Length: 280
Image (cartoon, rainbow, N blue to C red; front, side, top):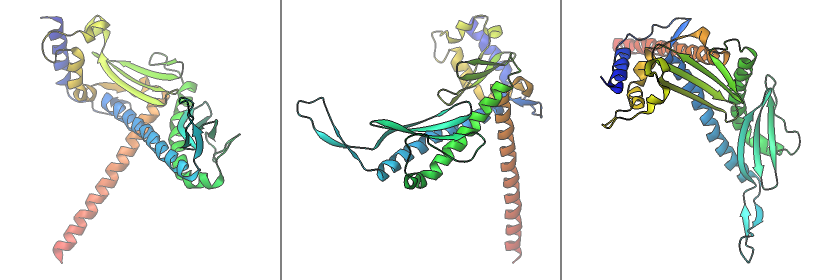
């Protein structure tokens, strides 16, 4: 049996197992990935909100006269007041930066405190009022992940499951056949998640990208095609997760439980309503 078929057989055996029965102490890798994906989705929505804010602010502020130096005869054009927007997370506060031709405006919010402020150049009161809801939504999401990241640094006791590189926290959980990896990069404000065959299963980490000359035969494809089953069948001990990812999972499970309760209540009301209608 060649290498590829041997690994494929290991994957086939793994996905036929029973899904993880979750408890307070043990979850499936599927739940971990779902929690991370949900928060990653919220951070992506932040960028969409920022685009809307940029458009709204450029409607509020008058356009500026600009000129091009690339031509022999300079041509004056009307330019948007703001030409970009970004956000970042520091140790104790989050920040939204609005870029303009000459300079920038920074809006800041300290963790755990109410109130948004600017130190130097600032938006007008009217402009901020028009965009307050969007700014507050962004700061809410940034503060949530920012405080989790800060808490992870402070509670970094699981040295074997988390490591810090520049502005990133990564948890790698090695299971029987697979490495489950989740991470957060504070510099880019992005989450990541991945599942791959571990060294014990492949003997040589470089072999996971080997391609045999027949359709769909890479190990990566085999994992991708069976990813959900692999994740559902892979147990994760909560104690092996660092603070940030523990809290993400706790919050995700609590919200899912609340959704299920609300759904059950709605179903009960619908049954009562249907029964009353049928009796009339």
